[in-house]
Image (cartoon, rainbow, N blue to C red; front, side):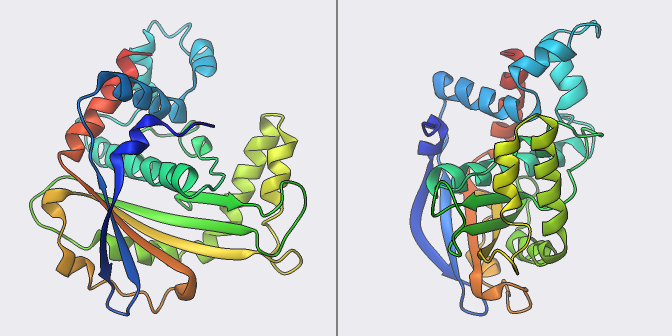
Length: 272
């Protein structure tokens, strides 16, 4: 699958911070631009997480709504009524980090299931934020196969920097309990869709005792540049994390991110 063009805007700054306990923190920057072609493709990619074209064609009839109205009223978090804007920011952060591990790092990262069946559009989906899978062999099981589970936190509004990376680390620690439920949910959704092949690929990671693999954890903060504070981020502590020895830390910063987020949702609706 080709890399989406908007991932060219996600750039490794080369800057590295160090956490309070000596863990490297990668610093990336989202350098988005006013390019209608790229933004339209990005908006479609974004929209497909909530409702792909085939499902949209089935769900809109009978509602009396246009495609765009249906998406804004039934699928997308609200643009102004709380907590809609914060849910938009959180979903955006999850999706851009999922894009990063899929297209930059090469993991298989099925994630639409997290958004397309939300019971309440203005709520975050419970459970692990992002799960990526890496297979050494296309067919078979290898102890060097990897399960990568990440937590993300966003900070795209307000005036005072806070350590959202620490919050992501603390939530990532909870993945020790949530991992099994999250894997089961993904596996079940594949079976619901009549896709036993991908379901079996997920199944490979459900019993580490009998089928060993490498478990990686990650914590990411996606923040507006104005809320980026290196000194605060370097206070992040990881020693209490259950997988501290295999924990990746990263920050993505960018200008006017909330404006970008709202623009993507509007474009995703208007161009449906």
